[in-house]
Image (cartoon, rainbow, N blue to C red; front, side, top):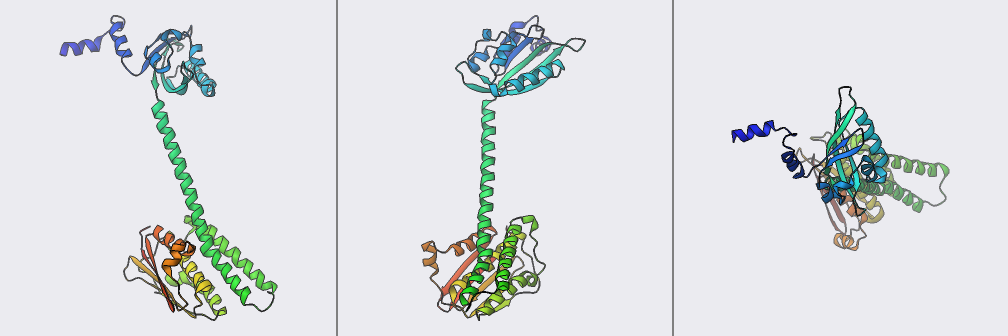
Length: 353
């Protein structure tokens, strides 16, 4: 065993070409040698025929090599390889090689540039590898990444749709109610005020869809103040009493996405009350029974509705929007309704999203 190992380490290729040739031709890598002065192939492994269909004898000069590179990659590949060879730099090249039946196979050539004492190239020695499966895998990964990007964009659009429905939709309902209850044409300042409110809500929706711009308020009071002001003005116009109950400070604050989801939930729920409930009294409460749990309840004394029937009919877009929002941030939404009492309860596990 030792004698054999010693012999393998000291073999002289000039004295034992047959063994070296056998070793080279038994691998998947296809060896080749090109004389730089004549640009002729002095050797190419017989495996080339199994890969591309061209016989070893058909590889006479580098012109045969260049002619069998895919047209889209030929000029760049040849130019780069020539420049690197002239500089005496070892290199590799990936390209599609033409098969004898006019197909194409992805290959990678790894080239060692042999130079004389003056640094001028004398020969090229290298290997050609079939990398078709690798390229297919890369293409599949690229397609999967593209699909993920497409899905992310679709999710952003869906999120924006929900935000427009929940936020801007509430403002439009407010304005419609104001117009319907008016006894005459609206004054110019009143119309201007409505348009400014729409602009404000639209800006908020756009800003909210950039998560880095979302800032969680420092307390429940700070959070609910603009919502309370906005909806209390509307409820006062409709002669509806609305009570807001909340704790002064967070035990544990929600994250940015949870804060946004709960804000949209309140907007949608309050808008639904205005549109459908005919309620005279509304109560909103926030509490944190546990440090890692936030519970929102919104109750009204309106006409109520059949929750199951509305959900089954496919008409409850607002309900589905609220449920989807809560599920995305680790929350659960439930709605109970009967004449004289409708209760919406949202339970949120803080930090779950």
